[in-house]
Structure formats: C-alpha cells, structure tokens
Length: 498
Ligand code: NAP
Image (cartoon, rainbow, N blue to C red; front, side, top):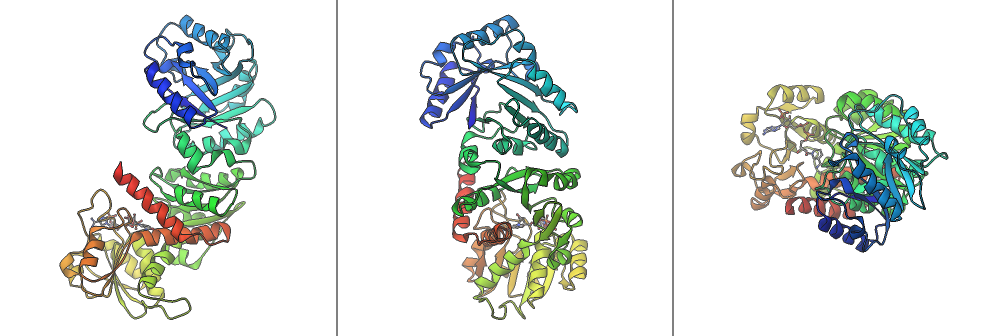
C-alpha cells in the first residue's frame, strides 16, 4: 500500500486534492497540517473522508512548517485522535506527551535532514519504547553506503514492529520504491511533483503506474540504470513496461550514483537483489575496471553500458555499439546471415566520445573504412590510434567523402534543436545519415538528410535497439521494439509538450 501526502497552504486546496485522490481510489492519505497557513480545521478537512488518514503536524526541527506554539500543535494531534483518524504521526518527544487512545494507531517517527546517523538501530530501539504501531525513520544519505544501511535497518527489524525506513533525496529513492520487498507496511508519495514535501518523494502516479508499487514483493528482482544525473532517464519507463508485458516480477529503478560511489554501489547492490544494470554517463568507462568478466567489445571500446550481476560476479556488455550498428545495417537493407551492407563503405563518425568510439568500433569490425573527427582533435587522434582507423580535422569534415555519416556529438539535442553538426549543403543524395541524438527524434540533421534524399537513421532506433538487447541480457527474452519505440516517442513528446 502507498500513502499520498498532501501538503497545502489552504484548506480548500487540500480538500480539492483529497477529492482527486478519492476519485483515484487512493487507500491512505497523509494530511500535513503543518503546511496550512491558518489554524487546522480537521472536521472540515475530513468532511468527505473516504480513505484511511494519517494526521501529521511537524515542527521545523523535524522537517515541518509548524510555526505556532507547541501546546497548540499537541492539541491538534490530540483532537485528531479524538476524531478517530486511523493514524497519527508523532516524534519520540511528542509521543511521550500524547497517550494512546481509541483505535488511532501511532506512527512514531524520526527525521534527520542532514545525515544518516551511525546508530540507526539505537534510534529504532528508542522509538520502540514509545508505544508504536509503526516506526518510521527517514534520514539523509551522504554516501551510497548510507542508503544500504537504511535497507539493513529495515531488514534487521523485519517481523518485529512494522518499520518504514527511508533514505531521503534522489540517492535514496530506491528505499521508497523497494519498501514492500523488505516488509514495510507502506511507503510515502506526493500528490504532485511540483510540491516538495520531502526530498526524493515520488509522485503517487509514478509509484502506481511506472513502478507498480502494489505488485512488488519479497521475490521481486531488481534492475536499474546507474548514472549521475539520472532523473531524466527514460529507461525506467521502457523496461518497467516491458517487464509488465512479459509478466515478470521485476522492477527497474533509476539509481543516482556519484562517481566516488560506483564501487560501493556495485559491492552493495546484490544485497537488495539487484540483478542487472544499465550504465550511463558518467560511469560507462569507470565501470569497466570493476567488472569480473566482459564481452570483448567492452575491452576494445573501453566502455560498458550493461552489467549483469550474479551475486558478486559482474559481467559487462556494450549494447550501444551493437544497436547503433544494427540500426544502420537495417536502414541499408542488411539481412541476418548476409554480409553486412556497411562492408567497404567509407564512414565518417562525428564525435569521439563514448557513442562515437562505440560506433566506430562497430563499423570497423563489419569492414567499413572509418574516419573519426571531434572538435577536440587530440581525442579523435587517440580513438583513431586505439581502433586503428583514420582521423580528420574537425574543420575539414565537410570536405571528407563518405557514404555513411554518423553524428555522435550532442549537437542538435533539445533544447538546441536549431543546430546541426554537419552543413546541409555537404549532404549528398543516397548517403546514410545516422544521428545518435534521440531527443528530438527529428533533429535538424535528420530533417536535412530527408530533404537531400539521404537515408536517415534516428537515435530512437539506436535507443530502442540497445534497450532491446539489454532486455534480452536481463531476461533471456526479446523485448518488443514496437512497444519501446512507442513509449519513447510518447515520453519525448510529453517532455516537449510541458
Ligand atoms: P560524450 O562521451 O560526451 O561524447 C560527445 C563528443 O562530442 C565529445 O567528444 C564532445 O567533445 C563532442 N562535442 C560536444 N559538443 C560538440 C560540439 N558542439 N561540436 C563538436 N563536438 C562536440 O557523449 P556520448 O555518450 O558519446 O553521447 C553523444 C550523443 O549521443 C549524446 O547526444 C547522447 O545523448 C547520444 N547517445 C544516444 C544514444 C542512443 O541510444 N540513441 C546512446 C548513447 C549516446 P567535448 O567533450 O569536448 O564537449
């Protein structure tokens, strides 16, 4: 079960949001009375009550907004109990002043918005002395290992007093979504992403629709994407939906992991049943040194975007290169089992970063004559040396004759949609023009390519291709490219619409 917290400045707004939650059959709602600008009028708020309710009225030192005298706050909480709400949230010091009464259950809570104290179990033991029905501990992580200490606390107290252990912020997001896997009675979410109630709170719609919170149980296998930043990633949408369609008890999460935490994350992830990872910026290169085994392409490219975890064994793959290559081969009419249509073609790769190096490697292994170019010429020279291909000065790129042109720079990416890394006048009819940029799908380069009679290949095809290959590595089954393409297009157009 998930709880939706509503925290508004006015009663009327709070009632309006509550109505919407009732229309959406939300079973448990937390009313954050400390957010109200006027004295809380609980009977008015509860006039249309049709769900279980938690009443919370928090002091600033516990992360709340209550500014009135303490005696008034205690009165509000006592009144909530007299009114018979299902739960009240009380901090340990408050709990001692408010005895149990009637059927109202007591959530005894501890919040620390600056750190994750070392003695979490001592804190839990102290809260357990306050006559709780539920213990809630919400703390802020500084390092990724703090997040796993919160999981450890949740696990260590399973079967004792029901516990909700939360690591706050984007780094701790996984503790909120995986709560039912480790026996938490419920988790918290927010009504709207525009309202910041507590750092890292998911919206109830994403919890329900993207992460299918109510279907997570102790057997759920965990997958995810590790990156920094990670909030923008569309991979959770694609993989979670694909797991649903394949009827698999699996969940895919965004893991915000800072570079200095990557090793700890990989060490600790198996303890919460993480089985597979997509790897994105800035970890694709650093992760290679932390693998126990890898695909030869990973060693050649020096970058890895997929890791399969088998307890403490880590197997690395690179589905980026295979997907980019395949999308070009398909556009050129290539067929499985036949010689690749890129063989013998001259290919110019713009950008010698992760994607550029991966595609240059892929084209080269299929027999294309590859030349790389980058605004940073040292980088292009280094990649050319490593792969044994050619390099051309960035300023000379338009004069270079090629039949495959591949953009692997971010030029043209949203919001800079009026930019292109290659002049329209230099595009030739019949040329294959690939763009790794997928947001927008129709970049200026792709539009120009169409207008000049070239064969366009969009970054969506690469994105969908690498996700399909990852899905196969994660599950042993093929993912649906059609489904993934549709989800991706919808998500991108939603971003542009808002
Ligand atoms: P990267 O490692 O940062 O490499 C990008 C390269 O392009 C760098 O060498 C960069 O040089 C260069 N560059 C940046 N801005 C430039 C400009 N204005 N003019 C010329 N060169 C420029 O990034 P990446 O991971 O390879 O990603 C490149 C693009 O591919 C991104 O847009 C990414 O979203 C996309 N991508 C798409 C997929 C997919 O599935 N469709 C997969 C991976 C990547 P500096 O470092 O000096 O700026």
